[in-house]
Image 1 (cartoon, rainbow, N blue to C red):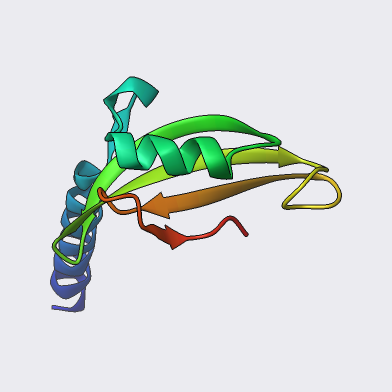
Image 2 (tube, one colour):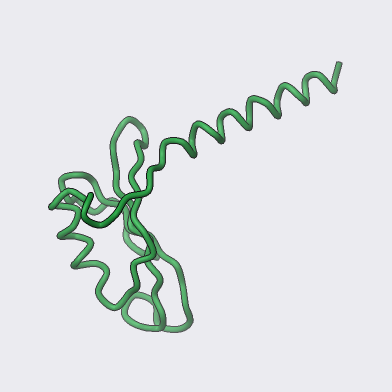
Length: 97
């Protein structure tokens, strides 16, 4: 009986993970809305852009920009990956760490 419950839980967990992954879509820079592109240009100074994606979170679309920051600006030492989240209207939702 416990084996059936555990296997069932695993199937549900994998299905949930797959659905969450399916929501994120990789984008090219030219696919970003103009308001999002403006924030990207401002916030990515001194960083290397790794990629762009979009997803729906809590029923709202957002755009994510993954950055690699190498010892300048936002992060003082070392190399760190960071992320900016932006609403379609250009409102910044999360700042690089």
